Length: 143
Image (cartoon, rainbow, N blue to C red; front, side):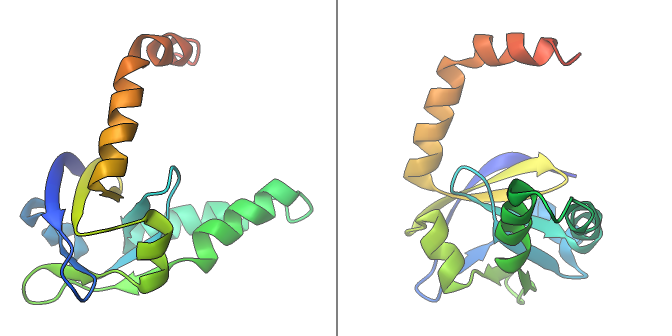
């Protein structure tokens, strides 16, 4: 599982070091794609296959289904760890997430996300200030 929050810098070639504790789950490669909230999602191959199967089973006739499937699948790229434990983030994904040098990697159990450090700070501050409201809404779902 992927858990934790880590600060890493993007190098001038667009590579970022994956936290050491995440690397053993990516030995068979990984998929990086556009995420929600202007971050990037990174899945191991097994978790990506589970998500992809769900996406392709969404109703083709519904515009929102088509749009979300396009967002996730058309933007996806295979990535592999290099010898230093880095992945190369394609230009179009770096641009989508607004990644500059300072980045944050957040583990979310079955995936991790890559954020621009300033965007993550703003998102986290906003979410933390609304945590009571969020918790109350989730309690309606049995969480």
